[in-house]
Amino acid sequence: MKRKTYTARCQRSGDWWAISVPGLRGVHTQARRLEKAEAMVRDAIALFLDVASDSFDVRIEPVLPRDLQGKVGRARKVRDEAEVLQREAAIASAEVAADLVQTAHLTVRDAGRVLGLSHQRITQLLKAASGKGKGSHGRGIRVAGAGRSQGDRSA
Image (cartoon, rainbow, N blue to C red; front, side):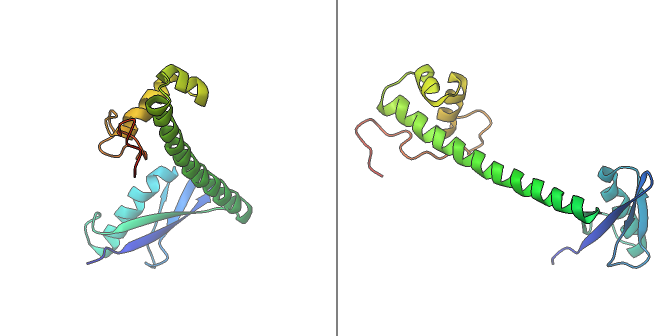
């Protein structure tokens, strides 16, 4: 069975966040800081419905002036786009680092110099590409050509 999700609308009221749950008339609470809102609203909903506080999900929705909401949305969008580009850059760097070291036989330091990265970062990229990186837990960067011998470039 799918868990019910309640949206908690949080609006500034002086030094506090006034919190209401539109789906549950009469459920209101408050919190000094937004980070405390979920715990406060979770307790209020659990008390109101007489259920366990971990039996449902809560989505916090800060209510901001329209101009600020737009700016927040834009900042989040740009940050998300930057994260995608960062992942793409890491993959591209790992692929070319592997080629520079394995195919062109450059040292890790020289490969770093060519790519404008530290030799330590090149080592990290090579380890991640081979799946042997510390803490990679199998989530290393997949690199085409990594781990193949010099003569075997077939896909």
